[in-house]
Length: 170
Image 1 (cartoon, rainbow, N blue to C red):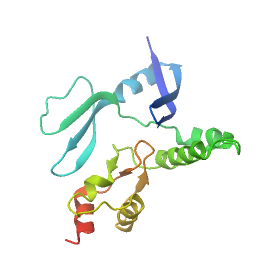
Image 2 (image 1 turned 120 degrees about the vertical axis):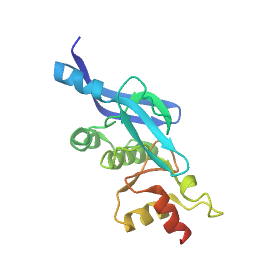
Image 3 (image 1 turned 90 degrees about the vertical axis):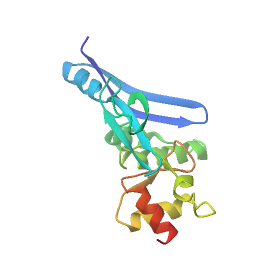
Image 4 (image 1 turned 135 degrees about the horizontal axis):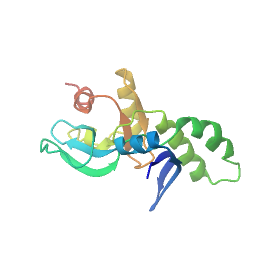
């Protein structure tokens, strides 16, 4: 029917998940919407994760797959900066302001499924604080941002196996 969607903001807080999006009657947006459907993949041995574009399910069994799901951007960074954050008010709760800031920061990071600090510090004997993990990743020259989806979650374009090796001192 030549309708497409453009996510402006999406967030998870507690058991509420909300998505605000534009619905556009335009064939180009409809085709772009279709290209943003796919699957998330994960390889536990290498900690490799990412997205596979396309629908229906690919015939690959090398990865653990989840989906079909939206693999495009979950946020419009321009909308968040120019409209969303301008409307965060003083009377908002501390939690609402905190989540809003996390969402904006996350929107500027890499569009990769988030990882957990538990995966990085699994063999360490203790779990590293998320800010320490992000500091190590940034120290290696990669992008890293906290994820609002999970208290121990972060997004990065770094090779997580390499990050684990650096943390373990190998």
